[in-house]
Amino acid sequence: MAYIRDAIAAHVQDNLNKKVVNSFTSYSPIWYFLGAGDTYDRQNPYLDGDAGAGHPSKAKFFGSAMGMSSAEKIQKLGSMDHQISFVKSEPNDGTNVTYGGSAPTAAAFAEDNAGTAEFRWTHFMEPLKFRKHSLQFAKGDTQVRSIVDSMSRPVVERMFKRVSTDFWTGSLSSANQDLRVWGGVLGIEHQVNDQNGSESVWGRVDRAVETELEANVLAAGTDIGDSSTVSLDMIRRVNHGFTKESGGDFEGIATKTVDGRGAYCVITHPQIFQSLAAESEGHYQIHQNGIPNSGLGGFKRPIIEYDSAYITYDPFCPAGKMYLLYLDAWSLEVQQGMDWTFTGLQDNSKLEYGGALIEWGYYEYMPRFICHAPHLQTVITGLTSAV
Image (cartoon, rainbow, N blue to C red):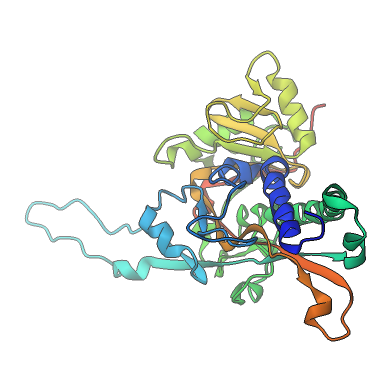
């Protein structure tokens, strides 16, 4: 390879492809559960005649998104926004008709009962640069690769950390959700929330007005459980229903889903997970290499199999919280040409008169992360660990 720009760029992209599967999959359980790490060949992403770093052939759609058809997914890909229709309120105009009585009438037109939420792209870019001299003075192919590897590794790791953090805690105000390109994704903490606080606006819709877009927020020891200590039983109660300690019935998530699975993806903080793992020992299966028979690879953290749910942890998950997700209602879209791609290197001294003797480029990732049914998602807050 020596100092050949295209060869260096290809080497950087190849390393990135491997790290996305082997490293970022471990960084982000939600990314793994949506199947985004194993859907296409990242070692050979240049299809349909495309060539060169940064040009994978197609935009991509991960997750089932409430059973969207292939045609619907294709229609959404590449568009500036992804619109989601929701029912503002449940019609209740029907009645029993008596002998010779009058037929019921609708109080409102059906089309007036539909609302629309919108999600837009987020563009992550991470800059990378090398001094030309460090590459020119390298002795042969091996040393060039060594320099490139050691210099690019911290940049890639920082980008993974940035994206992983945003997938959890990313939040945008109403004004920022009006921008054509969002300054971050709406993270899980924002989407699985209610009308209170800065998370009120979801997909450009105010949940204080459209309350049916609220997720289920339960306080440990107040709404669920007689103390703040986490237990596996909390997962079963959320899925099958219970009476809140604070009063009122909670309808189980499993009763609301077509497949009856309920919240089958449970992610929590490592400290909370340790307590659940200790409770599971000798009673429930703890898998060490991902979900069995799933065909998904790269995930190395332990997963507890409990009832129909899979439980794991993420260090980026906010402390004291456990998220119970119906994952069929989530999707992750990635814009064409920006699925963890490297732009290639540019010789700055040839682009700018009197420019610095550096080679530079960017890592790029442009996702759109959407929960299509917040009411099927639950977060338990204020949890403590028993260990």
